Length: 78
Image (cartoon, rainbow, N blue to C red; front, top):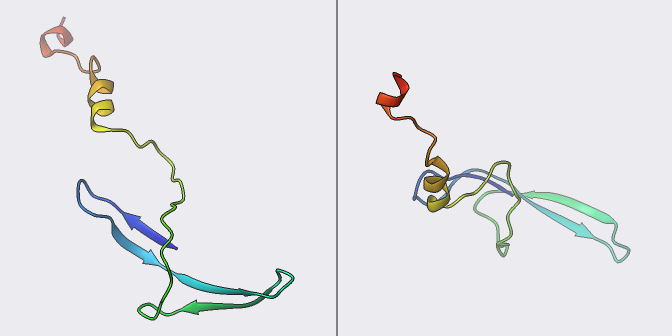
């Protein structure tokens, strides 16, 4: 698992990472759980991500969503 942070247009920065190897027997029962030290992993990456709270909106949605939200300074003084 990874916890990442994305700032602007830059690639995500990994904040925390943990790799755990879980071994199962033929019945599907866990027989062993081992933490893999950083740098010693030979694990294929899964591209699926865990959804996080908040909305992911496009630049166009941000722009259109702000139309009409701000008052002109002349209108605010009336």
